[in-house]
Image 1 (cartoon, rainbow, N blue to C red):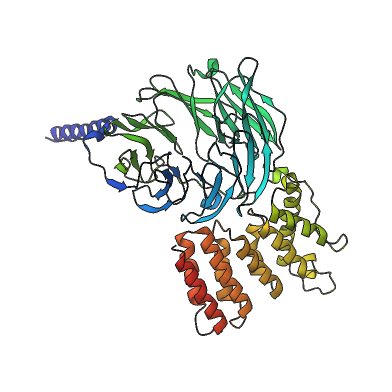
Image 2: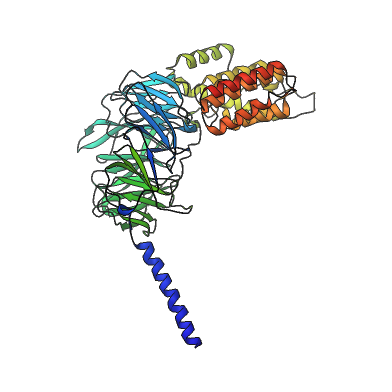
Length: 588
């Protein structure tokens, strides 16, 4: 009896195991399923949705820009008076860039509020390319230009005969790889590199014809028409070949579509019929694995999206997700037989079809949190220190100010006017060094009055000069030092300058400055210091309006509401009330 019972239990467990395995490998038929959610738009989408920290954004018909979440909630829809080009870019801090009227660059905050428009003077051919520190690059057929967070043009470079079929690609040091229309002998692609400050290099000739270029940690990953792959890297704007992977070595026998794994030193190549995947390291081109997928052909792919440790492929009829070992994580045998132009696999686990009937349809594929879902891209702010002078001058009691009054006026005029070009890297190097020294000077504590004061403590007006120049720079400059300076500084004049920096710069991608202003108002500022508190209210308002995120609005509203309490003067209360009304009227 016990033997029979054991045999029965064993058989039952074996059946369950086989059933589960069968269920995992069996493809899903979405053609018979109703969508889990439907979102109605005011027109068809004209470009593939771009993932942001809030969700997704895409250009639509009727001069509309749409923002929605991965589970179908419409966040906002913004109409424009002029035609939108069919592309959109998400930059640092979630700032959005679109092109209107063919030649005008528009920047919007993450909440969809337009912040500025600038006419470039040429037809913008590709999606704007976001830089590391808040700058953005745009290209025409014969021009490449750079703009700052304030809408000022920083430089423009005439480059005749660009290949607009290959978008400008960011290299590992922040330089730009710009392909040209003409080719060298043997149909070899030709390109130049341009530094973030507008300095161009000599021409580079590649070993073959480049058909795709994508950015990754190690440089620009290239796919060639002869099925080979390559990596071009850069050192201070000087490009060099990091490695090449001939087709004979990789086993790739057809032109490959390439995609880098987000945040990792790995990439995928998709090629052949049926679609075959090759996983390789971007550091040296070493192939890790090659396997054949269930998707019919690489040529017919309508989506190939790398995740952290897997990749999703889709054509017009089927979709599948594969891990790095070649195992099928999920498989869709039949997609809904509907007329759609874009598909995406969202961060909430849905296959979303952007149909031509003005609707988005989401079908649940993944139930639990896993590496099978795309993570929202995190674009951290950083500078281009690779191009700075190694030892920029610093202020001290012997040599005096690193930026004298005349130089400060020159820099301020240039930041206000724009088109300052290659001078920028010298100015930024000094300003970044100065605000870093300012922070260390105010953090230093000494009770020995015989010791000379640190330079920035001894020269209070110079603090305002540096902070004002940084705020006017049009990029994120010195911003990471402001929270600690606000907490450590004990000079009322410098405190005012720090808060005014926050109000003028406005850019606060992580919300640290806004959080610190809240802390200062509640814990450090005296309730009778009306001047400082009114400046804090103004800075809080400017940051909230510029950044445009609900979290900023919530914190800003809480701070301004607190500043209306009876312990504050009528001037502070009136200022806080006016600031609250300003935020409310913005529609955030």
